Image (cartoon, rainbow, N blue to C red):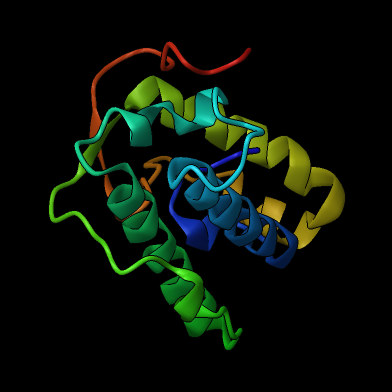
Length: 142
């Protein structure tokens, strides 16, 4: 499971669809609807929130916005009717780590997008996240 800290417009089609599916799984985990993945480190930032289901639903709404922009049809009715109104912090080190991880994937599966992104200097976070100074997040598995 990878719940990207990066802005979803960096993702290729395959990555965006995978993020949506994994995010829906994460929502079910946070709602207690599944027994698996309950301790997955990618869920840490959402579990630390006062409203974990609202946090993941808000995260996924931004993913669906990117899908809409591309002309895809992600089923928003699958999202719980909860949300958060504040940003979640993400460290600059985490964004850099994930961006390099994404570039490695794109180099193979989407070379055109890789060429566009490899010169990016200022990495934008997911719209729900706010960049703060810091190293790679403690929950990241290296």
